[in-house]
Image (tube, rainbow, N blue to C red; front, side, top):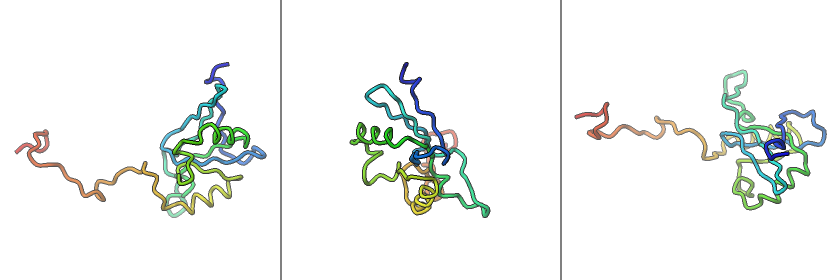
Length: 139
């Protein structure tokens, strides 16, 4: 069996009894490789923003959610203890025992910046340089 065959399927529900809910704010899926050749894929943030009835983004929509066996999560933490993704001050990945608590924590961290947010051209107040020779700025 290859590492690819062993990629843990991602589940984002409460149906797995005893499964931990791993929340990831990374902009794409992330795979942790374990020493026995097992690969575990964490779901990244959804591409489309989830919104509530008023049109405001839902906090839980900023996170990809993966249900994992607690033993498997402990192996990831042990083998990747030096990863900045799992550090004590990282808000990129966190774990809760169920979706209700995970969604509540996601709402608490609604204003936390991950560093992966897109830059708003209006907020950055950028503009093209004059005379840089580009096709739109000749002269």
